[in-house]
Image (cartoon, rainbow, N blue to C red; front, side, top):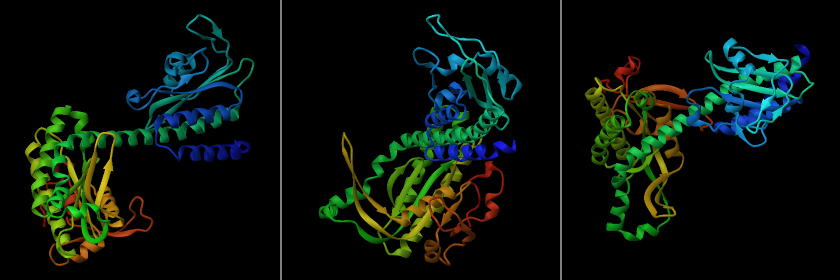
Length: 407
């Protein structure tokens, strides 16, 4: 074992570096296979057979090189004795005398020893790494340890990529459901055209704004247990109910951003914008609770997580040009917007999180609860974050999500 330590360490570091640059499942599988071939010089083929029942949704099967033309790895290897034994015994196996591979035209490919090592995630076999060696060769103890290490790395990498795919699909689905809100998005643009068309040509300007991001939590769980029609119904009712409090507070729905909305408050002075953003957030929270309460006998609750931040942003017209049409919107960009989005991402179970600037501007108007310094994704230094809800409201059952009493 000790004499392999350095080689195993170097191999693990090399694999981690190769996988760090992508979250696309098939790229990960191809890089894992390439590394398996490099680790075992006697191998004439290496495959990662995906046994996850959901694999066909998020992967494309790798192609086996043992045939005279590309074929699906699973059709090639799934019934091989080494694979069957590895799955049954739930551990790595090596078969010294393996049967030839039979091609569709009847010809045989002579092979040497065959190895199969399961890839586990939470005691469940997600995939199997399969290696076929050249005739007359053998797998060494070092080969086995290297591939076993690779299987452990593979499990975490594939699971992370699968979850990334699920989140991406979730955002796409919700974004499609929110298309009914599109008439509200360019409202500020229409107002500018009517009142002062020359502003369409102006450069973006620095302006005090408050930005509110909201997104959904619990959508995946709901989708897994209900039909698409039922899910669409509750999500559309929920988001439609948010439009009135947003507009009543003077906010512009700037974008239907993935699985949520971006709203800008920019029409008044800094404190008033912050006041309106917080008021809108609390109103949305209340509407969210009412919708969940209405449907709680039929649906799991969907939480709306909210992040609000205030400060100076570059505000002005942004043009999106596509192959079919051109769309214009009035948007705010910069660190203020980015932090609001990160706060919404960080919020959990229907919380409303605000930044330091917003907290200062609404001081004395609403109670705020210090969450301490937190690390937000994409932001280097930890920042102090505040909640508009009592922490005790966020520690109960998931069924209580977004149904707490707003103080």
